[in-house]
Image (cartoon, rainbow, N blue to C red; front, side):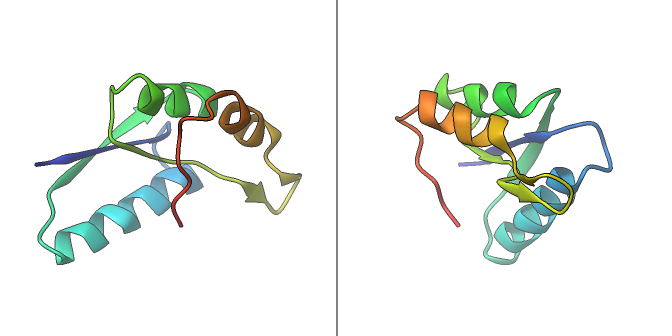
Length: 85
């Protein structure tokens, strides 16, 4: 099975960089995957909850604002999602 991974687009975001690193790790383990950019963090998480993708890479904190509240709020709303580190 190929794993689909959502991330905050556009190209060049820190979320994309983290998602690429994750896909590289999966590749080393023999797992195929591909990235799916979304225009917002909320849409990225909703895509997982709706089954459009298997996983999402989203920021929880950043160096400018601290906690990324849209991520935390959306995770609270979509309580069926599981957090993996």
